[in-house]
Every structure is written in structure tokens, then in C-alpha cells.
Amino acid sequence: MRYLVSTACNERFEGFLINDWLKSLKDNVDLSETDVLVLDFGLSEKVKSILSNSGVLVRKCTTPGKIVNTRFVELLAFLKENPDYDQIMMCDSGDVIFQKDISELFKLSPDNFKAVCEDYRVPMDFFLTKSEISEELKREIRKILNERRMINAGVLISPVDKFIKMSEFLVSNLKDLNVWGMDQLLINYYLYKNGFLELDKTYNFIPTTHLAGFIVKNGEFYFRTGEKIAIVHNAGNKKFIRPVRNFGYGRDKNKPKYFLIYLMRLLYRIASFFER
Image 1 (cartoon, helix red, strand yellow):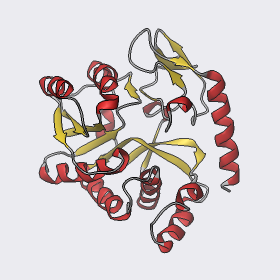
Image 2: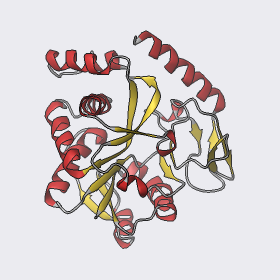
Image 3: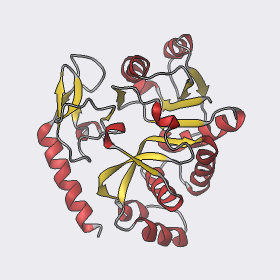
Image 4: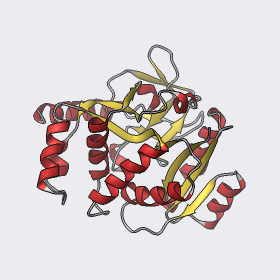
């Protein structure tokens, strides 16, 4: 069995990619059966050299648009060119760190998609009103996702054959690759329609959209039970709404913005109520 961890990055986040994302991955995750792929959307030559010397696969990407969308075009092409992988983990690179070994997820329920759900409903209308997808698909999305909790696509594990089919669906329906948010909505629709295994929140913990209490000790995240969190995701479309200041991997990192976390949870709760 051979597995793949894939992410995408540009020069803006390459420092975090090297010093936090990749370092935390290598320090904490058993990669003996796993390759690491970085989709290169404009990395510097220095960083590409560091990645290559670290044994990381680097694929030069040229598809125009937002990375959250174009990564599926490029990853789809890579997987078709490299058919020997059994499972893939696709994850974000600029706001994710690993704190524990998660390699067992590749062997868990190997025929299913695996992902973490947030504690709030999918904000469908916000995205659908700006979408160029067909009215028929919009109606079906509303029907499938009604009252459903949001699946966060920042960490997604899947059999490669199923990931290819999902990516083909996304690529064919993302009419505008410069639109933000539609990838998440379409992934939610596809997984709820076709089935997935919901993982525990420790495998993609987001301080603002998960209600569990947490603490930071020596730069590491723990639930209040004392359990170390496996994957921490400092999600937020804009820097000012990301819940952790100086986020990263190391003893001197990670200062939670507790007031912002409380406020964002309240706003998500209100938005979730009005989605009913």
C-alpha cells in the first residue's frame, strides 16, 4: 500500500509551509508508506530546492484561479499520471499543523471518504446566490445539505479512485475558478450524497467552528481533557479573523484570540440559526 499527503502553496505562505506545516508533519507523522506532494503555485527557487532535498515531490502548476479551486485541476492530473497510490490526504498548507501521528487514518475504513464536521450548519445561500452552477444543481444542493453540519475540506482523506471522481465533479462544476467558497460547498454536497466517515474533531480542530474547550501549553494545543489535538487548523479567509495569533509549530508560537473565538462562535451560531 502506498499513500499520498498533498497540499498546495504559493510564495506568500512558503515560510509557514517549510517551518511549520512540513516540520510538524515530519516530526509527528509516520511517513514510511507515504509520499508528500506540494503543488507549486509560485514557490521561490530556494523553497523548491529545500522541498526536493527533503524528499518532497513538487509539481509546477499553471492553472489560473484561486488555489482552493485550481488545486483540484492539478491534483487530478497528477493522480492520473501516478496511479500507484491507494489513499490520499489533501490538506491546507498555510494554516494547518500536525501534533500527533495520523497515519492510521489511511487504513481506517479504506473504502470511504473521511473528514471532520464543524459544529455549525452549511451556509448554503451565501455561496449559492453568487454561483454560476445550474438551477437544477442548486435545488439539489439545498435539498441534500438542508440541516447538515459543514464538512471542513481543510483535511480530507479518500481512496484515490473516489478522490478522482470527486475532483472530476468539482472541476466540471466550478465554472469560475476565481470564486471563493464553492469548492467547500460542492465537496459537502458530494460527500453527503455519496457517503463519508465522520472523523473525530481532533483530526481537524478549528477553534472558531468547534465548540470544544482547548488550552495552549508550551505552544501545543490540548483539549481541556488533557488530550493533545492531532491536527490544528487556524482557519479564516482573512488574517484578522483567524483565531490564533503567531500560529505555527514551536514553543514560542500560538496565542489564542479568545474574544474573537467567542465572537466568531456566536456569529456562526446566529448564521446557522438563520440557515434553517
